[in-house]
Length: 127
Image (tube, rainbow, N blue to C red; front, top):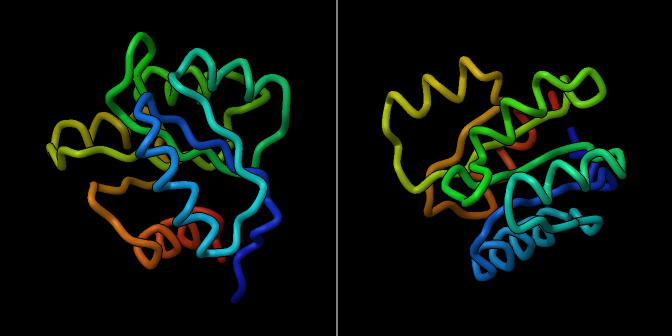
């Protein structure tokens, strides 16, 4: 089944290079409508301005982390069901458990490639 690559995607990372890498991987998969945010608070204001089909966020950011962003998204009635993929450099069990409890849709550990990203997105979007 084909992914709905017309969905607008918001990628969140405080590291410009990582934003570029994720954007390029998404482009390889076929996603062209991609916005960026530098941290959780910028992401939240963008999420309130526009309807996204997917959020891909790094865990480690300041001042608002990806985990805090996830918690805010999940408690917001407008955004609560938004597919949310967390990216992290550490596959710490407690982080995975915390993210799952906070309602993360899926989890990716760096480094990853387009195939991994595609599989995670497909799992999240149910395609």
